[in-house]
Image (cartoon, rainbow, N blue to C red; front, side):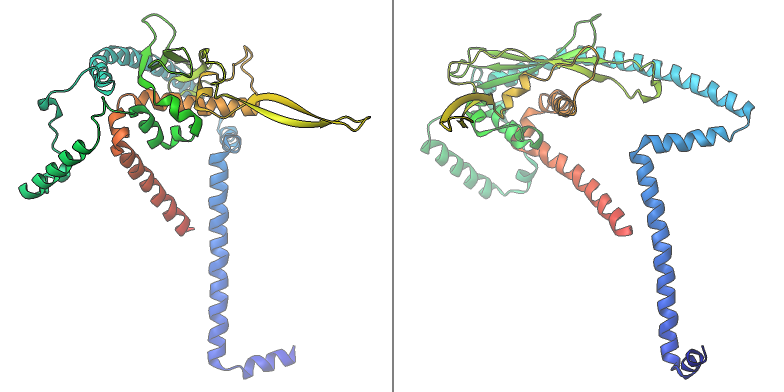
Length: 361
C-alpha cells in the first residue's frame, strides 16, 4: 500500500486528470448500460404480451379491494364498447357494399379499355401531368413528334397489353408470388373484381379473376372467397380490433394436360438394399406458383393448424386484403408505378424513425 501511495503522490497532475476522465467515462457507460437494459425490458414487454399482462396483474393485485371492483366495472363497460364497435364495422361493410355498386361502372369501363372493347375519346384521354406543366411549347411539340414516330415504327397494340401482369410485377407483395412460368398465363388476365356478401348473409368478400381463353386452363373465372367475422371473442373480448378473416376457399383449376404449373415432375434414383440395383423413379410434387393462391390450406373445425399452414394462411389473408383494398381500386396507379412511389414514401418515413431510434441507443 505504501508503494501505491507513493506512486500516486509522484503522479503528474495531467495524469490525474486523465484518470478522472476515464472514471467519468466509465460512469457514463454504466448509465448507458442501465438505460439500454430499461429499453430492452420495455421492448420485451411490448413484444411479449404475457410479460405485460403479468405486470398489469401485479398492479391490480396491489389495488385496494374497493378500487378493484370499480376497475371490473370499467372492464365490463369496455366489453360493451367492443360489441358496439363490432356493429360499427358491420355497418361499414354495408357501406362498402353500397359504394362498390357505384364504383363498378367505372371499373367495368376500365376493363373495357384494357381489353380493347372500348376506345376512349380524345376528351377522355386528355391528362395534364404535373411535370408537363413546366414544359415549353417547343419541348411539348418535340415530345409529340417523338411519340408519333414511335407509334409509326410499331404495330398498333390493342387495349393495354399485360396490364394486370405489370401491376403484379410492380408490387413486391405480389411479385414475390410470381414465378417465371406464371407470367405467360397472367398475360391472359383481363380483370379482377371484388364482390361483397349479400345483405343478411355472413360477412365475406370474393376476388374474381377473369381470364380470356388460353392454352393453360379452360376456366374463364377463378374465384377466391374470404369469410370474415366482426364480433368480439367471448374468451378474449379485449383483443377485438375490427373484422378478421376467419378462413378462405379457392376453386378448382381445370388445367390443360401438361400445363399445370402448380406441379412438377422430378426423377429420383433408388438403390435396392439387397441386390444393389439402381432404378429411376418419377414423382409428381408441388411446384411454386402464383396459382397456388387458389388452393389455400383448409382450416379444420377445431381451428388448429400447424405452423406452416398458419404462416401460409396469414400471408394469404394479407394478400387478399391488399388486392381488395389497394390493387383493385387503384390498379392504374400500380400499373404506372405512382402508387408504389407513395407506398415507398411511407416506408421511408418509418425507416428514418427506426434509424433515429437506433442512433439514440
